[in-house]
Length: 318
Ligand code: ADP
Ligand code: DP6
Ligand code: CO
Image (tube, rainbow, N blue to C red; front, top):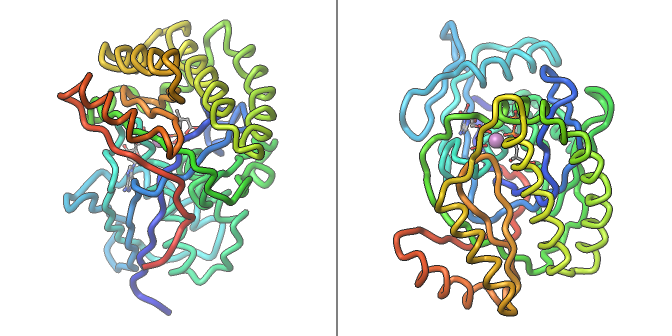
């Protein structure tokens, strides 16, 4: 039996979003979602058995609140044979809780590490289901390239699977507006959004968009992918503004980036936005256009950081 195991998983960005739960405890979603795993943003997590009285978390070299990982590990203790307390040491190569999917890479990495240390059979469907319990979006980070999380109807039927395991040349330019931790977590934000009177129509539209997105990916049609993803994401943020206690992840900088992206598209370049639960914007484009866009964005927004990400791989052991 190994004493210490290290795993890495990459973040993923949803092109069709998960933004609402039908079961909070089980993390069952109201919509199926589809994402691309990114190569340049990831989490590395080591787990070790300990005879201490509690699970613990060291995140980016600092002792951190272990409530969420401990709840996750307790869930695993009930699903599998009970096991001793775990000390978790994790490093995010992505800003934590800034809307760049640190919960996806971190719970996928923790799941992979736990499967290895507990010597469980690495069935990806089961790993995805377990990762889902930590954070819904983590269900998709088990896989590389494109993954679909079929919403299912219960704990057993809700898991992600590889959809199209190929790099189709899609690029994401990440405009880093703020690496600060958000005030409204994804978990809380999506539950509020579900109170919007328009929420059910967003859910219905999302099911149609998912089918269109799948065919756009199979056709490697990046313009179609971008148009659908942008509409789906902007619709998600609209629910936040229309719900019972309205809130908005966008800042003025977010809106300026969106406007400039639209301007670039109207001037003939492939450029679309998608935005998660935070102010940072991901610009969807292709390999042939990314340098041109980077030059334009850096000139227009000299104070901001821009990184490029491409399709990344599934979980791995180090
Ligand atoms: P994000 O947009 O980054 O996914 P979320 O609100 O969904 O933001 O999740 C952020 C939370 O995920 C953090 O507050 C923390 O509880 C958890 N988290 C992030 N990174 C790690 C990590 N490396 N190890 C354990 N938990 C983590
Ligand atoms: C906007 O997976 O972070 O990034 O399941 O409560 O942990 P919890 O939420 P989380 O939500 C992600 C929301 C999103 C869209 C997406 O990744 O699909
Ligand atoms: Co998250």
